[in-house]
Amino acid sequence: MQSRFNGFLWGAIFLALASGASEAGAADLGLMTSGPAAVGNCSDLVFVCENGRQYPLCPIAVSVAGEVVTASLQTGRHGGAHVRMVPMGVGYRYAGRGVWLDGFRENALLNFGKHSQIACTLAH
Image (cartoon, rainbow, N blue to C red; front, side):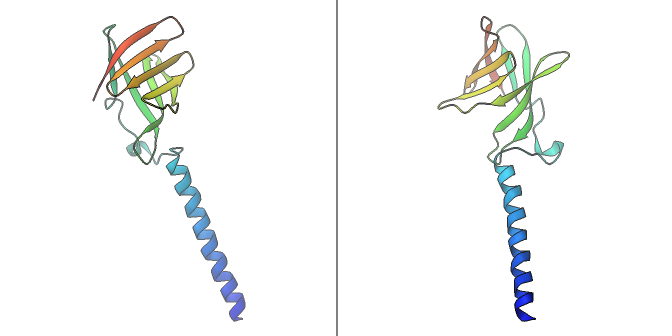
């Protein structure tokens, strides 16, 4: 009877640790958010560009360290382009279909295709 109880206890502990570790691992990767309060507002990150337009970056998933992993780059009135953070050695890059944003600190270059590039500044 005692060994059966110990086996049940160890099994319960293992399951609790395994389920907690998988949730923490997913959160560390920035794959999940727990509602709208977990991500920033679209007005938090706005790129002001030389063409006179502003392009807000609306976070979808944020890592535990506070880095935006996936976002929607608002490029027009009809919604935005879904972009993902691409690991870089220095600076940052958010790339999506037909659009990407390369930057270092407050300075960024917004690219629409291969032949259209606009200099931007990040306004906090």
